[in-house]
Length: 200
Image 1 (tube, one colour):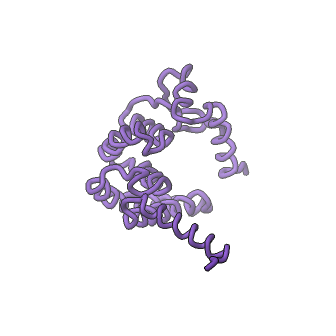
Image 2: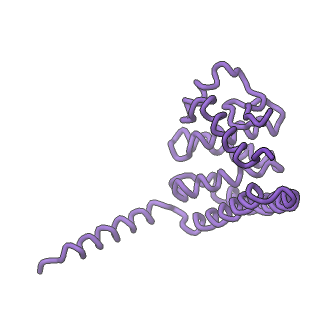
Image 3: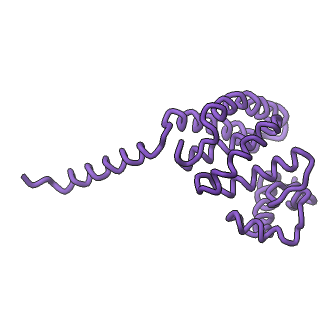
């Protein structure tokens, strides 16, 4: 019996879908991480886009959310180690990293995650750009200069990197982890900052 083309296509799509699902070791964990990230981003979006008079309240909500998520993230890390691409897929692995970025109140946890990320990056199971961002965050949070220039402050509404090791060779280090030149990055951050904080 001849199988209609549309049925063959459906079977192929269904088969590929099953393969994709099987490649993720912990689908329930993936959903949990994605849920945490969605809340994380929602409160951050509300703070960034909120009115000036509401900023203090929105900042408090944002901070409380990050603190509330930390023990959940720590439980995940304790049980599964770093949720790499094999465990939860690329998107959810990145989502876990993003939430950890916001755990500045728990430097020890950030350091533990950073250490676990390193072999995952070497084995191409975690994003080296994410590692660079967390490396800089941990360095600054522990009173050291950053390595990749990902963390910025603003002077006269223009982005400048916070304390940075060997600024002359920063673009070499950035290239090694897949980041664009720092000049391009600072221009982007400046433009974003000015859009978020228009002059009155």
